[in-house]
Length: 284
Image (cartoon, rainbow, N blue to C red; front, side):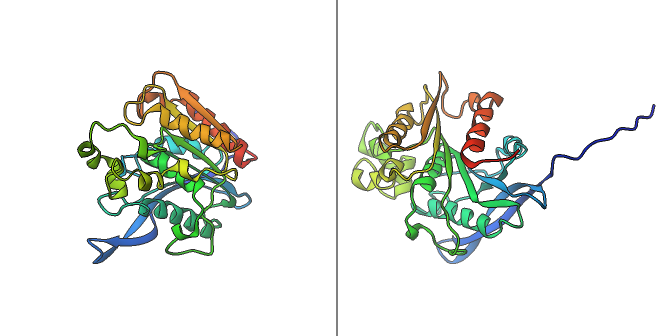
């Protein structure tokens, strides 16, 4: 059997490129250098620029895999976005503010290469889970130039919308059974000090410490039964942003634990897509 059909080409062709080096950082006790890399999904479209969403994987600042969620990120890209999943240094390599500097370096790189990847440099969103949710909030809220280091410093690292999933937002207030237990926590390893014994310094690296009326729009997503990052952490950031008069919404997923399957359902991703379309604008 033969069939001849006519297909009108109205959608762009999407490309995936992996392991794009966007910055170099110290490695092996400062004796060597290594590349930080990102995976990119972008449309081959010569006549249009697209908003860019930066995705940040979680892992307690101890481990991360930038390629772990590419299946879902492809769906996000096909909804009208360029998507970049970026690597950052974990706590065994460098303490705060190194991971925040890495994400900001990725945003600057993407702006510098916006022509190549069909990005509208004025429309950037950021999204991530857990430790990546923390970095999402920090990237959106912290605009001090001292966190911009490395290359492409002529470009801004600011973003125009943020969607953190189950983010730690005030690590100074985490409930630890004892100071000894706190010393081994991911939060203490990020800070480089016991967060329970250095609460003021711990608070100074938290998203809630950087909320101002100038914050970009936020969509915070958190499970009500989160046993790793308490739901109250998402509530705290929401309330701080709301008190400052910011554009913020908290979506509570009833009964969901940390990184539960509910976060990877189409219903939720459609909400996320609508949020970024609304806040970043898109003609798709």
